[in-house]
Image 1 (cartoon, one colour):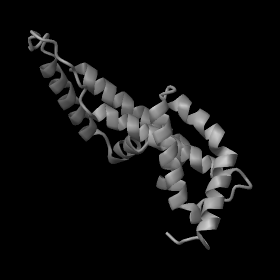
Image 2: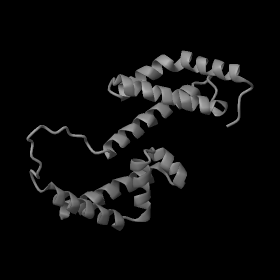
Image 3: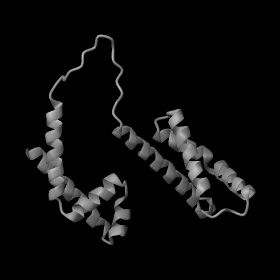
Length: 174
């Protein structure tokens, strides 16, 4: 990261970004976080921190590109946080005298379904696996993937459709 001319320029630029985009960014993030105040504040703070770190490469504010940059960073931070929460196990408070035990044998069914899904994914072509990975795990649009793979957007959409159809058929047939 290269530094701006001095700290006053940096502080001025951050203040200008906040003045121009702070309120809309806050509303946007509150909507994404279902108005969870603490999460929204954390996302906004991290967004502005990233703007400060990349201030010298941030797009100019004259054509609205800096606003799009801020909103994109905030959206991706919210997505990353949601994914982190999904990975973490749910915490459950126990009640005195509560007994633990299986209420049903969901574990075996889940293991079988996971194995069937793994096998179905391994049977997909490399092209189908790649577009699924890009679209669903890297959260990229069909246009971004098409540009990256140098194929038409319709090809990407077709590959996603047929890959999902093959996975669905493989998982439900067993």
